[in-house]
Structures are given as structure tokens and as C-alpha cells.
Image (cartoon, rainbow, N blue to C red):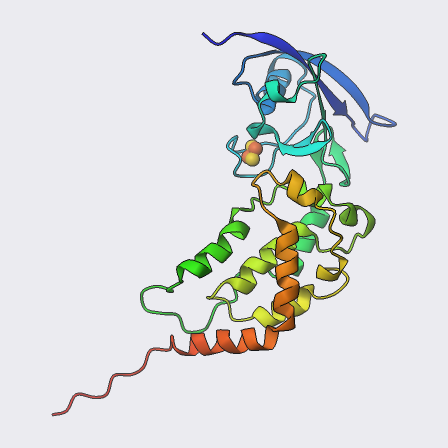
Length: 261
Ligand code: FES
């Protein structure tokens, strides 16, 4: 049987309707080696303090809603064992994602995060004519898309980035990563338009090289590399657009010649 012990979970509390400023509150929770930080917070909510407010949905590192700051790093609470995030006194510090307005306790306002995401038109702009059966994509093209597809939009990179904190108009690492996915997608018709959207000081030219986004991404993605790739592709956007347009023209079904009588 797994040994049970206890830990102190220290949470930053803040209710703008009642509190002048944020404060720390400690909770002693039971813990085994399998207990995640989200498990601990749910125990607090159910058994110790029903006023504690946080977001979560999937509990399997898929929805991104439980992202928060633990001991100074942004993590997914549902994917972080409590036992691995205790200091020498057995305490785990949890705060809301930094650089985003706090709605209550661990819940932040992600409006700016989503507004910047929409700027890059993250949806597919496909051709008018599509193949009868399937879009054929080469293994190389699949490999290029793989990283960006793993992003779950949790906001860890956006919150950790010093540029998003300083420049409200910065598109942000999450949206630039998704922009690259669409630029590389062989089904998409508008790589040049997409590159034009990000090639400015709100986008790839504010690249700073600090790399907090890489360190805090719970999926191990590298938005810095994505930003560098966008800059490289921007330099040859016309050639890229011509190649894409030509490849889509080959998809147009040709009418079969009428059968001879
Ligand atoms: S609850 Fe969905 S990612 Fe943690």
C-alpha cells in the first residue's frame, strides 16, 4: 500500500471584491506519491475550504485549463506530482499564471491571450477544390507540423514571456507557434498572407531570445525555434506561396474525356 503523509499547500488567495491585495493561505493536505497538485487542490476545495477557486477540466494534460505557477514555474497542476514540488519544509507554493489579470484566486483573465491568438487566423484557409478522398501529406510535412499540433493552449508560455508582460500588443509565443503550423500546412492556401501578419514588431521581430516559453511549456515545445522558422520563411514567402498555389492546382479533378462511341 502506498504510504500516506501530509504536505503544506500554500496558495495565493485573492478576491478583488473583498481583498485589498493578494495573500498566502496554507492548507495541510494528505498526500501519497501519486497525488498531483490538482488532487491536493480538489481535496482542499471539497474538504477544507469551498471558497478556493481554480479551473480544471480534463485532468490529463489535454485541456490546458489548470495551468498555474508553482514555486516560480508555470506548470499543469494535473500533470505535476505534489511530492516533486515541495521545498525542504514540505511546502508547495501555488500562484495564478503571472502577467495576467486575476479574476479570483488561481483563475486568470485570458482575454488578451485569445485575442492575440485570433490575430494569426488560426483556422485552416483551405482550397475551394479538395481531393475526392484525402489530402496526401508527406512524412516530412507531418514531422514539420507535429510540434505545433501538440500545443494545448494552456497559456504557460504566454504568461512566462517577459515581452507579453511589457507589450500588450505582442502576439505571443502560443499564437506564433500556431501561425507556423498553418504556414507549413500543405492544405492551407495563404502562407504569404499569414507571414505578413506576423512579420512586424507585434510578432516575430520582437523575438527576445530569453527562452522562458521553452522552459515552461508543459509539452516540451520550442516557440523560439518556431519564431526563427517564421522569420526564415518570410524571406521566401513569394516562392512559398507560388509552390503552394501550384500544388493545389494539381488537386483540381480533371474531367475524363468522353468515351468514344
Ligand atoms: S485539467 Fe486539463 S490540462 Fe490539467
